[in-house]
Length: 294
Image 1 (cartoon, rainbow, N blue to C red):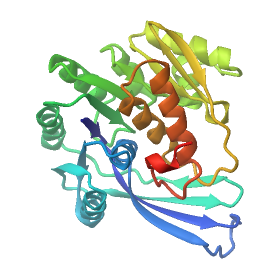
Image 2: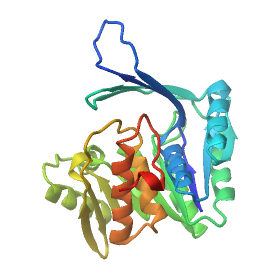
Image 3: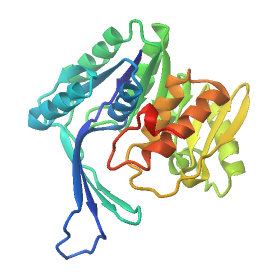
Image 4: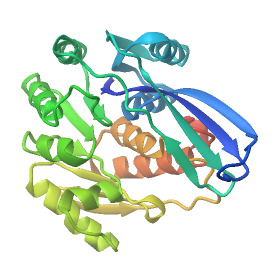
């Protein structure tokens, strides 16, 4: 069973458009509304694979209620943390050539009691979990050290942690030794403070993150594939994609595929690559099912 934690979830609206012309009326050729947030997407991909998952997330207002309703319709158990603010709504514009423009709202600010309730809810849901996947940006009210605190509490309970975040929150959490961190190329470059021009550069950067505390690094390199670096070795994999329809949630699908396959070694990397490649060929943030995997 995989528990996901999404501190700043969203209601995501994706519009498919021929092209995006500023200042003009743009007519959408398709639209979707999905529960959003990186951890939410991981739960959706795990559920699509027929595995049990529980999504822990703060929810508020009408958008929050709709997020819970949409997740339940997909067979996902929701452990909501009620908050006074309103869950954010995001917009994505997917052009026919694969270019994606996203508008992400900031989300509500969590108060002290809401912050503590979120941690207590994670601790309660962690019993019997194989993994806790902590994903996404932190909302207002949560310090960059919040993920580090969660990692420490999860390890004290004997549960493995996969972390997908960036910036100060990632760097702060490394000192608590998350079992897996999953940056994309830009986040990896930001974490080490230098550009990454080659897969070799990404390998060295991943090794740097391991030296700072990460047990393993699963790096998504976009069209260049994915890289897994652990104490046992390093592996690289990629899959050809005929056409990219939407890359929303592709990295989250990759993390789900990795965890579903055990979260270690080349077999898990192969699962991550297959899930990510399948996701980019689907509309909006639709998560792949086993039938979509090639």
